[in-house]
Length: 308
Image 1 (cartoon, rainbow, N blue to C red):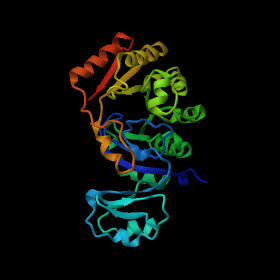
Image 2 (image 1 turned 135 degrees about the vertical axis):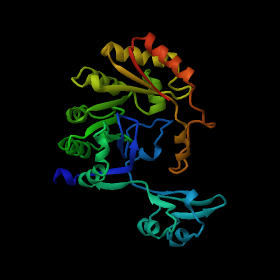
Image 3 (image 1 turned 135 degrees about the horizontal axis):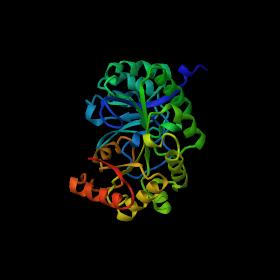
Image 4 (image 1 turned 90 degrees about the vertical axis):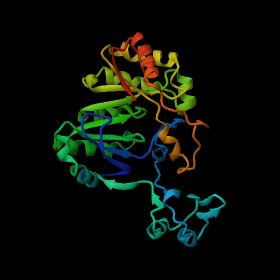
């Protein structure tokens, strides 16, 4: 199969982003993640499977979907329409017949060529320092697609960045590294057992790959990131442990401390999951973020970015 015909599962293409890389960027969100962070900001991107989603705010109550449902995949409750995606239904027809777009596929299978065509619509903006960022989910779970896509971007001299949690095969990371201009790598929890409890796996592979990146020729183009999740990643011991580890590997490392983002909570109902917080916290104040940065700085990190 030609590289341009390789398919990936894409759940969003977000244009005109000013995050996750310099300038104006187009971010491609690829489906599937090997982690199960209890606070995941994109829970719709965890599963590799393509599934229908129901958006109650778009529903006009016509119940056409209920009438088309033959196996109780869609049914009415006191709280409104519910989906049971374990049931066999003609989901394509149901989605097509929904007049308000309240039921949609959560992602699309697209070829590299199709995604490149979308990206090139934004190419005029990239000359001002922008580019393309691959996110997820974990984009490196789709290595063939990612590698083919990155090669197409470099043919066109488009700046490339990736967001990765690094829990992937080393050979995958090694293969894509030459085609990346910027790497954002997550390091969320330092203590292995706590990492396993809240993220689903231990962090041995992640630590190995952070070392791999920070000892590579790309190390000055790597940013290590930690999101500030209340009570889970915000402890002084966690920030200090991560800071010491990364600064001992490379004393010029860049460390980005991300503020808590409360917007992910609303997505959990869409994918039939329960959020980790009963009462959704608010983002941290600038003073709080400065306090986190002070811990990182006192534990060896010289280059700190605060994202609020």
